[in-house]
Amino acid sequence: MSVARPSSSAKLALLTSGGDCAGLNAVIRAVVIHATHNYGWEVIGIQEGTHGLLFDPPHIQKLDPGKLDFELFRKGGTILGTTNKGDPFSLDTPTGKKDCSKEMIARLKALGCGMLIGVGGDGSMSILKRLADLGGIRLVGIPKTIDNDVGATEISIGFSTAVDIATEALDRLQPTAASHNRVMVLEVMGRDAGHIALHAGVAGGADVILIPEIPYDIKKVAAHINGIRKRGRNFALIIVSEAVPTKEGRKIGKVFAGGQKRLGGIGDYIGEQIAEMCQAEVRVTVLGHVQRGGPPNATDRTLATAMGVHAVDLLAKGAGDRMVCWINRQVESVKLGDAIATYRAIEQSDSMITAARALGVCFGN
Ligand code: F6P
Image 1 (tube, rainbow, N blue to C red):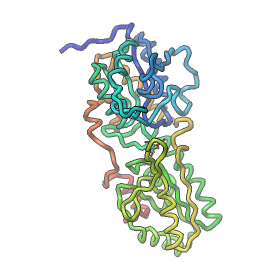
Image 2 (cartoon, helix red, strand yellow):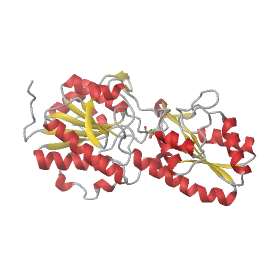
Image 3 (tube, rainbow, N blue to C red):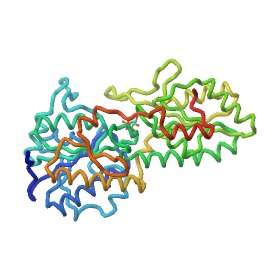
Image 4 (cartoon, rainbow, N blue to C red):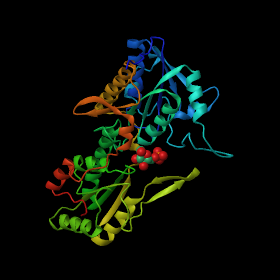
């Protein structure tokens, strides 16, 4: 079957969706430069994910490579804005839920865009696929999330920088812990998976790593801390993923306006028990959104650049319904549906778990 390749006057829509992370601006830069200079397309940025398409006229930004900030790839956040709220197929409105998908597709088509690059996590990717399927729009997804839990790719944009930030936090907590004979607990993000805690825990020399993929027993954590103290070390570092549950299996969090549930607080829960069980002075740091902002590191810049270029090349070949991924040191792509259908939690056989255990790190089990 022959595929229709876009003409040089084609228009490409580009959006970032879901929680922001470091590296999004580097993707935007790569897509805009490659699509414009090498294929002659016009790139239209949709503002705030699909949200920009809810307005008439739509909230858009023409992305001209000549007018892009030269420093863009170094900068955190996303110049297009993003949102991790609302599903266009069932959007909260003052008069109840509304399906806005058809008007969004119509606006995209009225802009002359038959191609879309969506940079997002698994949730955004599913929504974009439904929209694209419905509207006959050729979609290529680019995976980004500090949580690194998108299936079918070894790494997502934003993860590496988040790990650097969490590692630096442990580096900074260690001397103050040692100076005050304290146990420091660092709570990091990861809504469902513990990738940030595992990688930063290994890189930052945590004594205990708690992740949702490994059920823990607080008595074992306390015994490990007591062992360290008995052997003469006066401080200890614990890193815990926000998705780790309490003893009863409850995830701690908060409900924000509009009913949005967000995790946070397991660090305090663990800290209080360790203080009591080990008779130790404990302090808790919740790293929060610091992990998402700030300039992307070199890995996220290179990943974003390679993925952005590959996404444009796929569309240029007439492809669609694909997600760009990083496999075996290469940019590849998979069927979008296959990527969405898989989820990337930490496997028990993960080499980082093996390495950490070999060095005596406690996972609480
Ligand atoms: O999915 C990315 C993420 O940063 C999670 O790690 C975290 O649980 C969530 O988003 C926080 O969302 P918000 O920015 O809405 O507080």
